[in-house]
Image 1: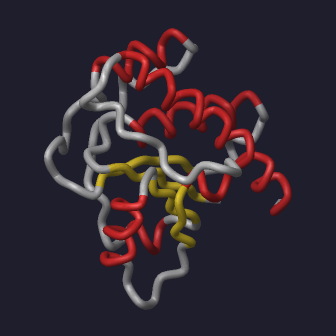
Image 2: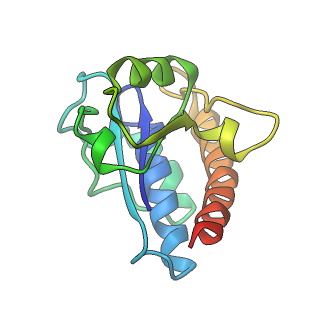
Image 3: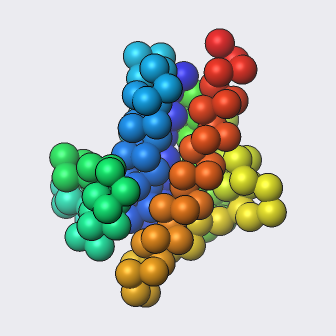
Length: 154
C-alpha cells in the first residue's frame, strides 16, 4: 500500500501525518509493506523543512520530522500512490482538479475516512501551540484506523 498525505504547503499537517504513520507502521511491523510520503497542493514552501512548531510538538510525542522537506503534489503521484489523503476540503478539491482521468489512486479526506464525526484536520499555521497538539491528536487517531484498514487488505 502506498499512501500520500496532502495539505496546503506540506509544512504542518501532511508531514506530521507522514511521520506519525511511518512510526506507527514501524511499531506494527508493517513498515516494509507500506510506502509513505506527503506533499502540498501549493508551491510556497518547496524544499523547506516542516514548521518548527510542528517539529517541536511532534518531537514531544516521539515523532521526527527533521529530515522531511516540502514538495508539491504532481500528476505522477496519482499513478504512484494507492491512497491520497487530503487534510481538508480545499485540498481535496485541488486534488480532484489535478487528478488525471486514468488515475487508479483513491482520493479522500483523511479524517472523514478514518475518524467518525470529523472530516478536516484544521490548519494550525496561524494559531498557537495548542493547534499543533490538536493536529497530532486527530492524526494519531486517524492513523490507527488507517493501519487497521491496511491490515484488512493484506
